Image 1 (spheres, rainbow, N blue to C red):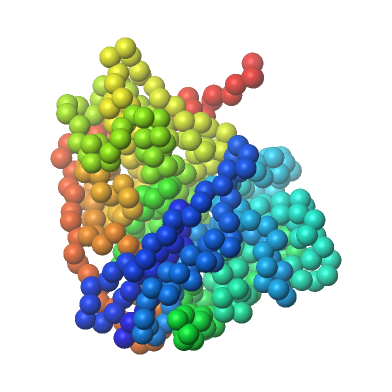
Image 2 (tube, rainbow, N blue to C red):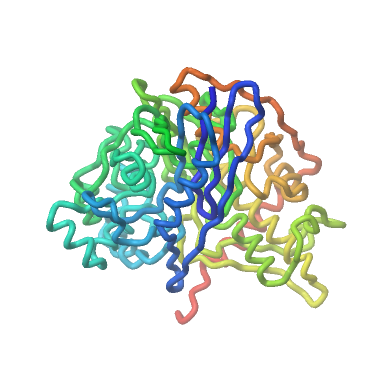
Length: 476
């Protein structure tokens, strides 16, 4: 039995083949354009994404099912009848709706959003983006008046276009700020609050089941799983029991912990209750989510400034850490997510001197991402005790210095799976289970153990975070 998982991510789309008796392998990976029309705006070309999904699917032969994971909060508008998009994809990083978010906060709306959706008011989530499209896109307004408008996250658009099923899975819906977390249904009051017509939204369904069929190489192949990317990664890491946790260091850093049948609300810690997954015919499994906006994005930014050229040159550094020498960097390049939720914060280096080198600055960037991740993970552990080692994946998991520094400040073992495709693996495993081909879990991991105790330096980093949040140019 063979299945293909299509991982449609922020920077690329890739397909992974999972077949009985064979090692999982990536069949095709295709990068797509990042579009920045204005400062704070981030878009993707929806047709490019659909085309890349098809190309990745067509790299496989003789498969029995397909699973697709998606970017999460990225969203768009399209015509219910023609399936043609009438807006670009507004990416989760997009911050164009911050003014609307500030207005809702000033009106005291955050309490109801936290209570019902489990999410803070932030432009990261889809609701304000969908409302912006309707307010600013004449074609979307025309379609709404004619009853033909679809508003939703990218998964619903992909499925509607490729299989004719206009649905979104419950994990993705839980990232919109429009779904009532307790009921698993669209919330009329939240939709009214943001100005998103509920009849334009896709149907919410479990993460596995019948999502229709895709035409792949002349064959009709069923789509059996659809799930948001970070929840797919959680499943790919083998996290199944309450307290199991993972963190993925991609463009941003995203930590997730399984909490089981119970919804854990921890707004005082900046943590977000969410749906981890829901299998067809079963109750939802819940989780706790915490994110860092800039992880690999901060490292790539440092590279674009000319601070280093090749990634293998920043895997080790001589001497003490940057923070031990009084040098710190806060990676708030697009604001701060959990536990601060401050979009106005900005990136900051502190402690530079005449002897500070380019390598010192890069070392501080790596440490800053680790410190931010530690803030999130510590908040999680205080709410629900973390079980065993912390599982890690993503591009930065290949950096030995970064991993050791993170282990040292957390004072916890890190488990690093040798497979670098945990998001796609989670989607593939969910897909395989639907067709009765349960994939064996792998124990092929390396473990990074703490060597020294750097926990004491967290207080210094917290001071740096306070400074980056207080930076407000133009104000007295």
